[in-house]
Structures are given as C-alpha cells and as structure tokens.
Length: 154
Length: 116
Ligand SMILES: [Zn+2]
Image (cartoon, rainbow over all chains, first blue to last red; front, side, top):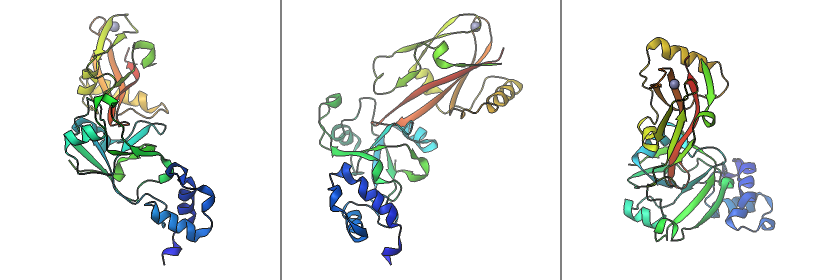
C-alpha cells in the first residue's frame, strides 16, 4: 500500500540528501529511496520531513510569526531544533540564542510540512556565539515557513 | 499623494533585534516636503508592529489605501501614521515586521506615502 505514494517526491528528497551526508551514488531504485526516506525521517509518501521541529523566541516574535510566517524572505534561513522541552534559560544556553531572545515563547513546526531538501545544515550548536555555551542541536532551513504549518505552544 | 522608497528618506532602513540589541541605533528621517529631520529608533517600530490603527481621518486613510492598491507591490504588514511636526503633511511609513532567522526578528522600512 505504501508503495502507491509519491515516490518521485520521496526520491527527490532523497537525492538532495547531500546535506545529510548521504552517499548520492548509493541510492538506486524506489526500494532504496524508500529505505533512505524512512531512515532519514522523511515521509516516503510525500517526501516531507516527518518529525516535529521547534522555534524558541519572544512573545512579540511569535505574534508576528503566527500572523505572517517564520522567516523574512525565501532567501533567509530559519533556525529550528528537534527538542521542544527546554526551559527558556536552557534554550538560551543550548541554542546560543541572541541576548534579545528570551525564549519565553515556543512554536511547533508540524511534521509533514516541509521538504528536507531545503535543509541546508543540521548540526550541534557550538558555544561562544553571544557568549552562550551551546550543546543543543539545530536545523537550518532555507525558506520561509507559512503560518499554516505552525502551532503556538506557549 | 506620493510614494517614496524608504532608503531615500531614512538613514537606516533595517533594524534587527539581535544585531541592534543594546546599541539603540537611530534612523534619521528627512521630510521630503520641508526637510525637517525626525529621529526613529527600534522601539518606535516595535510599538507599531502589525499596527492597523491610524490617527488620520477616515477619508485620508481611504485615499492612502486606494493609492496603495493601484501598485503591484504587496502591502507591508505594518505602518506608522504621523503629521510632520514642521509642515504638517500627513505621512505614512510602511514597514515589514518579521521574525525567524537565527531566533531573532526585525523591522524593514519599505516606503512612505506623503499625502500632499
Ligand atoms: Zn515636513
């Protein structure tokens, strides 16, 4: 049943897996694409990333995002993290947030919303940015994200 | 009625919360009618972020809205209305409030409308 999904999209997402460090030459045929998708948290039916991601920010920023979009223009990068259980101070440290970001507010990006081919980076957050410790994990996504894919958690 | 790009009348058209945090930069606005100068800071734009309220008369607002609709440019999500303190010309600053990026946000000044 699962094979009736849009493999073209899953495959496309898979081919863009360079950002994930995937061996491009190692994927051949739809079965490999399917396995690749599942292994990399990609929904094989629609090629979209199927895990929740979060954006920690201020109440004011969340007001703007929920009325517009996450990010400024389609050339801009949106920062997201897989851990939605951080306290504000922990988020500030782990994600090396700017001093202006109180992290009192939290936005959920729903699973199956965005294509992973637009992830330009996934990495551990290094310290020293804004004198924070770092240690969290971040995804960088090169696109704006429409508010219909977002849920305000707090 | 005249539309003027923000970079023609403001000394700074981008405020970003992380970069401008704690340094309180200003943008100097020069009235295109009388050359009077006015200073704006990030707090001014924060206060009017996603603003839909106007101090202008309903007629004035309608005139501006109609003028904006004839353009192809998408209407920015925020504006500030004021009368020039020197020449009294009704002025609207259109700007975009945005958030995202590296867990930050900001204000981008787009254009002004002079109702002269
Ligand atoms: Zn003036």
